[in-house]
Image (cartoon, rainbow, N blue to C red; front, side, top):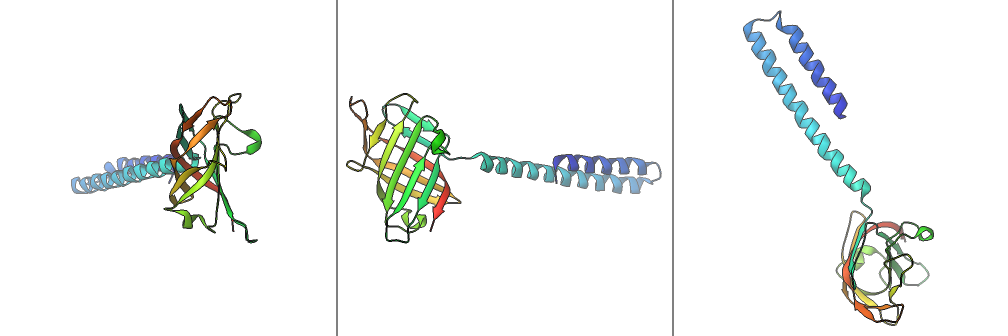
Length: 198
C-alpha cells in the first residue's frame, strides 16, 4: 500500500472514531480508543515496512556496478557491466568487464578487462583465478595503462550471485602508453551481468 493510501486510511479510521464518540458509553469509548490505537500501530508498521521495501528497491534499481582500482593513483567508476559469451563451436568463452554501458559512448575513467576461459558458465569460475588483459584510461585525452596478452594480470572470481559478479585483481603490472614506466595494479570489480550467451 502506498504511503498516501495508508495516510488516508488512518484519517478515515480516526474520523470514524470521532464521529462515534458522542453516542457511546464509557466502556464503548474505551473499546473504540483501543481499537483505533491498534489500527494506528498496524498502519505505522505497514508504513515503515513499505518505506524499507522502497529503499531496497531504489538501491537495487540504481546499482550499475562499481570499479575500485589502485594504479599510480586511485581509479574508480560507478558503472561496471559484465559480459560472458560462450561458443558452441569449440572456442573458449569470453569474460569481459567494462566501466561504460555503451562502447560507442565511453565515459572516463574508462576500464576494460577481458579474459578467455574454458568454462561454459560463470558459476564454474567462482573460486578460481584466471589471467586477463586490462586497459585503463583515467582521463579522456590521457595515456592508457595496459596489460596485454604478452603480460596479463591475474584476477580471482570471488563470487557470482543475483546477477552480480565480484572480481578481485590478485596480481599484475600495467604499462604506461607513454613509455614512462609501469605500475602494479590492485582492486575490485562488482559487475552487473548484462550479457550471457550459452
